Length: 120
Image (cartoon, rainbow, N blue to C red):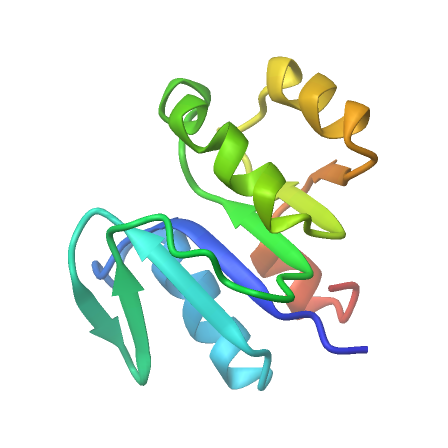
């Protein structure tokens, strides 16, 4: 199954977990899109600043705190992903309710761990 993934809140700083997750997704040959605060590239993947209406997104993996997530609620729901992953520090019970009402699965998990243990 193709698990086209959007990394939301990605950084071009190699020390950040979002950057590491993006790299791991690329290494695993997963089709990946990225949205962050600065226009940049991580390897061949462009980091967008705008809410691009990507098609066929399976997974959204979030690297934004719950306050910064608010502006993305409608956007994420509009992508109609199969699941949303809330990485450590991004947990957001308020948003879980919105996702649940739209029948979108969510998980509190670490994308890096899921990839490393082949559970992604």
